[in-house]
Image 1 (cartoon, rainbow, N blue to C red):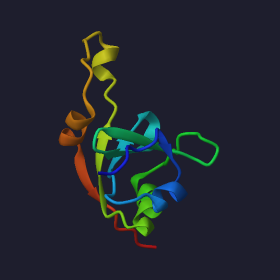
Image 2 (tube, one colour; image 1 turned 60 degrees about the vertical axis):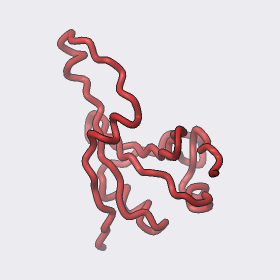
Image 3 (cartoon, rainbow, N blue to C red; image 1 turned 180 degrees about the vertical axis):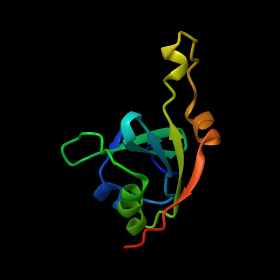
Image 4 (cartoon, rainbow, N blue to C red; image 1 turned 45 degrees about the vertical axis):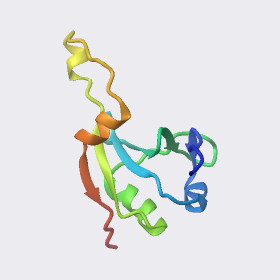
Length: 112
């Protein structure tokens, strides 16, 4: 049985991670930024910089360029939905599993 993921992982740590590989979530934020969450069993880890900050990407192609060389072939694209909250509708919390089930599958196929 694999050990739980730490709260944060750098690309170097991700490259050294034991099998099985985690599931990749590309989470779209406002203003075109994306963060990467890694899921394995019941643990979730944020892809981070060496300084411990959450790694941000300005497009999905940059995520692909970072993860494809590590052997990752795909991920699930999800979005933060703030519209309901802005107009006063209650927004019940969504589980990690629900978010991944409703996301869009994307392939990591980077061409230079």
